Length: 296
Image (cartoon, rainbow, N blue to C red; front, top):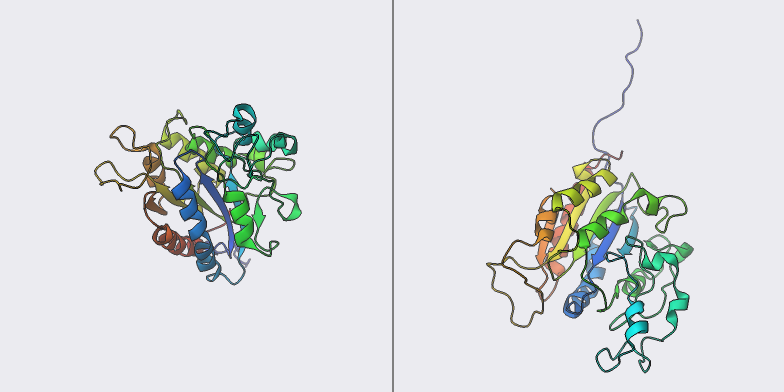
């Protein structure tokens, strides 16, 4: 009598510490407070997650979600009167720096290495292996390297945030020779951190359309993704007097609809003094979701 074939276990094996992080950050002129809060919250967020996994193996990317290089405006406007850190007399930005850029610096969805303009890094970041994303096992100073790529500045266009996130996950960017080669791993949990203080009116198509694009990149597995969305408060919530954000028309922000399509999500207020509570909730979701993850 033959032995029954072993089809393997269908029990979750977990992500085993493999996590791909995408930080999608608006570069609008209103984002100074929000970008500072993100940088201040990052180390605690990452440390909390790292403590949960004996073999923490993360890829961390700050994605170009608007398809532009922010230094272009500095080169064209040369207007220190209105942009004191972005002109011929600027101390931070050096005119002529476009010669340091590559095609990937203007590619929507590519990892950012060179942030330029007011409150930006203003020099190309050098990451291990020449990649456009951080590999935690290879970077001795994770917090400093993240600060370099995440100091995106305040000199970007209106952001097609949902489209930018979906583009980051496309095969052409992640395949061999692509700007993000090797970033997206089929056996890793995907964590998206989205920070934007205005409504996304540039992605054109519906939040459901862009969500399906993201879901397809993870093989249709709803348990392979976590969303941490730091966005505008709801219209009925009283805004903080000292928070500069674009409230637009009194309607639901498409980014909130997009975020709510993710079963595993944490949604925070972009006007909050700190993002630590949202990141604490997201870290707990990463631990929970990782344990239920079945790699494709």
